[in-house]
Image (cartoon, rainbow, N blue to C red; front, top):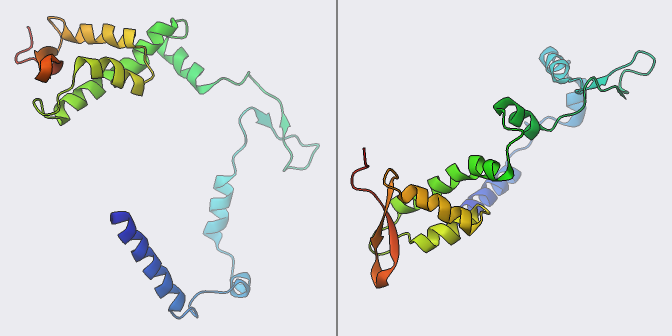
Length: 175
């Protein structure tokens, strides 16, 4: 309903604008005869950017660029990997580093946002549904879930309706 109301309000505003007096809107001819705005020229000059790894030569017109790379182009992800010192890690370690925090946060979010009795988060859902969202292998999700269920982990398994294993936070974290 909100989208319909918003669309109707936008349509009403547009029709009110079209029906209003448009004499205050400057025409193109009036804009051409108006004095130049010095701030606009400064903004245009500030927005001119020289492309990375390109050099403007003096033999050609200034608007033509000749490519002379000073160093090979590097992908942004490769640069980030170099900065983190993880460019030589295995694909499994990369998945763990990038996707495990997202997967764990989604599990926690689902546990906190749902009713523990009426609609609990089951281990099956954590392994298969949530792993599907993040394009993970169920084997990997099962391994990560086991880590969360360890003695020092933050989750515990309880029994839900019809004998399903449901996830819940531990009453007291082992310390």
